[in-house]
Image (cartoon, rainbow, N blue to C red; front, top):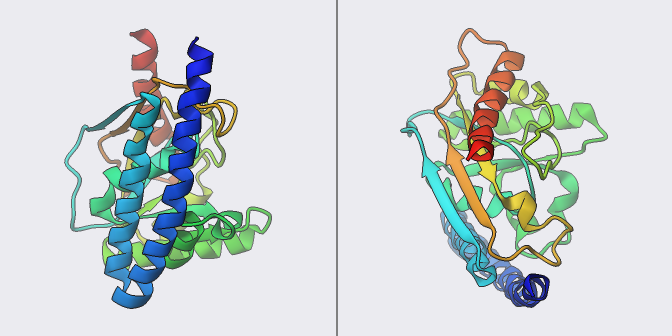
Length: 248
């Protein structure tokens, strides 16, 4: 019975998801070209609000918990664990105040209505994972941009998705490139839970009645610390929260 419900609710959500991609692609194009970058930012916020709360169609529980007071007068570097592509709409919506810009693989910048357009126009760092030099240059560009505008960057230090609570080691290279250009940025770990279980086999079927959550942890001051140390601290902070859930 539960499996059948997964298929039914997933079908409803994916129809909704497809319509949102198409509608908000047009919305973004009009917003950007007619009204400018601020309007485009609002259109992206609306898009990700609809994607995030559209998960209610699958019976999901959606929770955001901020365990700290984040500054608004300096750049931020968010370092979440990475369980699923479903991590991203929640990050964009819940952190919208901080104008989050992503480090993303360049392949995503083409072919996906709404999502690809935003990556190209928002200022995201689009990296070729086969070209280390290009990736570092692009991430450094993003670091300079958030430094000049007091925006935020989102980088997944695992480098790939890990559906379980057993994270891959956090790599420090991308973080180092961001901090080199944004030396006064606060590094902020974010714990993502449940999105890996939500889509264990891709987009279909999704697991209905999943509990999805995003938890912002206290920031890590980078001054006097090596990027490797910061990456380890961020991972340890996230792992401690994931372990809390395991013990419950």
